[in-house]
Image (cartoon, rainbow, N blue to C red; front, side, top):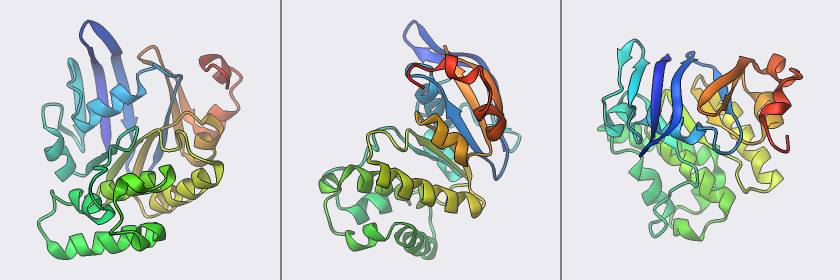
Length: 234
């Protein structure tokens, strides 16, 4: 589905990712792993169109989308849940969710997607009129994921889904992601919790210093003795 070749990007004079190659197959769950500062968020931002690529190709179903703006990529089915959730904190839960539908012209699809999100996260159905900024951290993450799902994505990119959340909430979120994966949505998730990510993903790749240093099936990668040396506190 997604093919990245020779991708480089950065900020100012600093290169965060360098000549990176990456493939994401349709229907798979790919876990993007790596220590803080490895370039994970930069890579996901580049894929979503929020960070410009300095060189390389980003192909979706064979079409180079490198120069497409974020809203055009969203219409092609690429949706990002950013690190820190980035909700409109002064708006209601419903308003935040509906903000994810601006790429959809059909009101029936919008209603269907809203029902789907509320079924996936029942707590959001109970709090559609609540101001998003007053939700708990876990509920805000559910709202952020729900907002991305409102766009009917084929490729759902999530940056640090479990960051700062309680174990019970983490378990609930991963249960939801497993359900989305079973429905055929392709997942690309950046995650600090390495064991949890590799326990659920089909495949993993480790980013360090802006380059992919390890990749393979999740079960194989999980047992690789070289894996821990790429992390601090793993």
